[in-house]
Length: 151
Image (tube, rainbow, N blue to C red; front, top):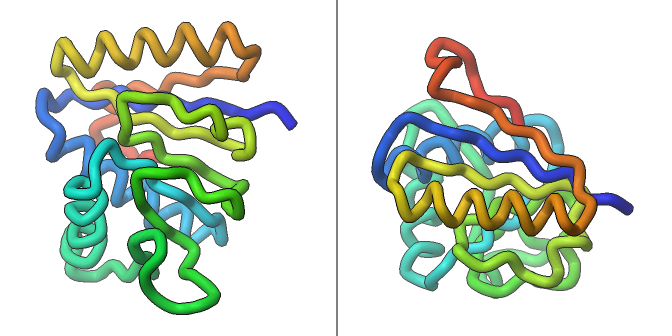
């Protein structure tokens, strides 16, 4: 299986916009019956994303939990700092490090905001995924202000 990698470029210069776009994409993925794992750089970020998914939009409901918490079977959206072996659909990469397990996923999604460090990490990730032979797609949300991002 070849992993498709999608980069979403956003016009904001801070992580808050990145996290809101991640929530919107996660909600779309859920409504399209996908399962997703959100790989976070830190446990604090995983907890932030957990809370944000409950509160980012008044009209949304995205069943999710932190990895290792919650019901069995787990909800379709989970987040944590280590990739679990049972996820195979979509990996949302909110980490500076690409996990070696990325190949177990059909798709990887990475959101790049306009901070210089974030753009540099995004370029490095793009090169790495290209070297690994992954099909790459970039979605410039800076130009698509009126449109909805597609997971």
